[in-house]
Image 1 (cartoon, rainbow, N blue to C red):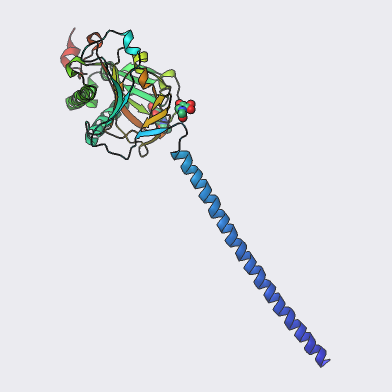
Image 2: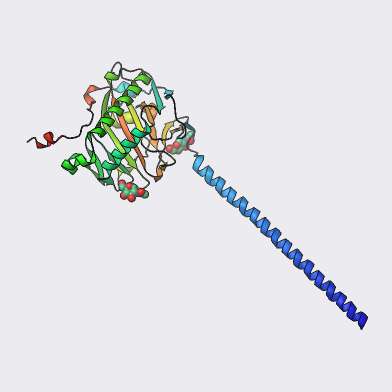
Length: 320
Ligand SMILES: *[C@@H]1O[C@H](CO)[C@@H](O)[C@H](O)[C@H]1NC(C)=O
Ligand SMILES: *[C@@H]1O[C@H](CO)[C@@H](O)[C@H](O)[C@H]1NC(C)=O
């Protein structure tokens, strides 16, 4: 009995040890699984993050980034392109009509402070109206301001109150910036600046991700400025906000047979190009935030010239 009891005890003891060992094994196995599951989760998260990163950075439609937002150009970057035949359908103006064509980008013509001041000007003007869709414009020349699904004349609409929205300094800055851009285009293309004229439309644009309501909101279609507007010979775009920090999407894209090339907007950056078919382009849809820019266009034809915009003076408003 004693022996048996001992044996039992022994057996019981063995069973207890075995249990302990089993429990230990189970615990080890569980923690091993936990470790494995942890590793698996890490791998899944890494894969998701990587895919996300690819999705946002590797755009299959973009072949080349001509100038990225993070770069600050110390001198203009010029990309020559073969001129299209578009200019042959128009009268040629010596010293202005493009003999060689190009697209170019500069970060030194307009400072970021000036770009900010111009953005604030645009914000104040556009605050009076705004499209129901994602794209609004403000044209200081004609006074056109997006409003709901149409346009109003900001000068008529706000009457004498316009003085609370725009100052003489705003218009002086606009004029100054416009003439510097004109000088840069003349230097780059080897033109006589006095034979280039501002032409319409020349306007501020504000774009966000809200869905389009009318055709006026559809800014993303590929187009050729000379075909769309006729009078354009040189187009310039002055960016007033930063791609990637103020907004997503909204990159400017040149569409070439050999691929799509993008210029990433940066406040104070000026992108300019000859307006013919050699520079077919579009703007990517804005996916978040708000993108501000100004389009400043030039013609060689004096018949299509417009003056710098001016603040309507009280005298002209009193005129019978
Ligand atoms: C976009 O701008 C319009 C005004 O033009 C505004 O009504 C709308 O709320 C804005 N959308 C976003 C997503 O900020
Ligand atoms: C250029 O972009 C268009 C969309 O605008 C796309 O259909 C086309 O495949 C792109 N071309 C290349 C070579 O990536």
